Length: 236
Image (cartoon, rainbow, N blue to C red):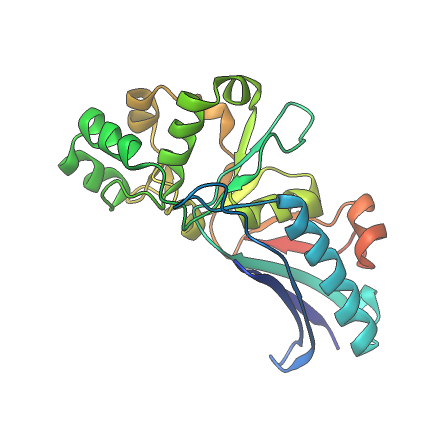
């Protein structure tokens, strides 16, 4: 029998479930973590909390189920959308993640609409500029924390940070990327037009995969921490 893992990175906690190949749940584990609100309307989390929760819940379901890690063939990650994770050249987190429910970025949303145009923004991203999306968060950091922005080399979404910690790969998939307000949704790729209008370096962005594609496999370091094997595939 072969098995797959589902990891759901939520706002209040991460839940991991082990399924057999018929879709039956074999074991589940949840680890909670806090949210910080430094000011009214702000919402941030420490990406390290997500990773610790992912490691703990993966180890827990393997232990509870008694399943041989060699038989866990793949895993997929779902989770809270829109959050901004900023990494430096060495892959280290530069600041707490500004998560989906943060409301500090209305001025940045107005700036996006003014630069791109409302109708053009809908054409490209299928959404108006909203405070929940990732692009306005990135512009807020550029304006208010320029030293952090200058050191940033990679931006990831919350679930894609866990993917990075599992695999070492900078990757995302289309459903999550569609909520960043940087994706050309009709063409399912990053929008060069929008990136140019907002003066954002495309190299900051991860490779985009379709949701069912393999994006990498568990690294040796992550295998040692989680109890999985390096043969375990990670999908979009």
